[in-house]
Structures are given as C-alpha cells and as structure tokens.
Amino acid sequence: MAPVIQAVVDAVAGFFAKHEVASLELPTGWFGRPYDNLHHLTEAVPFGNHVMIRLDGTQVLTVEATGTRVEGRVLRIEIRGGTWVWTEYGGSRTHTEALGAGAVQFHAPWARS
Image (cartoon, rainbow, N blue to C red; front, side, top):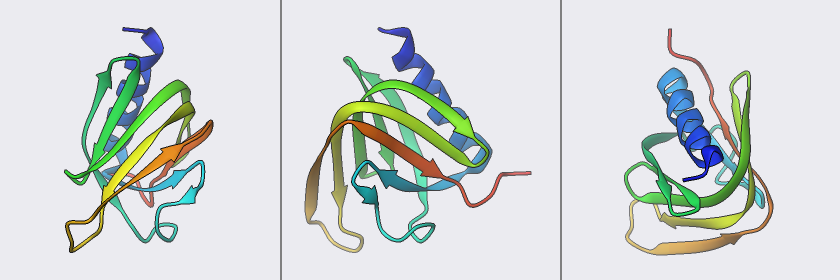
C-alpha cells in the first residue's frame, strides 16, 4: 500500500474523531447545501490504490488520492478521480457520480471539546 493512501485514511479518521460530523464538497460542488447535510464517518479504509470513505453507513466515496491537508475545520483531499455512490435520504434509490481530478473537502461546523 502506498504511504499516501494510509496518510489519507489516517487524516480522515482523525478529522472525524475531532469534529464528529462534516458537510461534503466534491470537485463538482457541494453535496446538498453547505452545512445542511452533516455526515458521520462509518469507515475510511485502503481499497486497492484508492481510499474508500463510507459516510452514514450507506454513502460511499472512493478516491484516488494524491495528498491531504487540514486547514482549521476543513479537510482537503486532492484526487485524480473517483466515484461517489449515494442513496437518497428516506428512499432506496442509489446514484453514482464519476469524479474527475480536483479536491474533495469535508467542512466541519464545530470541533469536539
């Protein structure tokens, strides 16, 4: 496993341990309204040459990450590409979005004390 993959997994786990919840901004824009959809981390694990981040038990973000950094309450993950698979709230319809190069960002509204 590439060191960058484990570093991203550790960064995601550490970020959610500190902030508990976060909104999601994809390279294509916000998933929902900013700070309206607050996601809980279910797991972040290496997945081949990618990082798989499962949110709320059912939403799955799989990215080819190249690096990460935290700035205050924002975790930024630079990616070459990936997929975002999500289920409608209150329903069972699943959607898949291909992600191009750019950044995935998690925005936390607060930090745990």
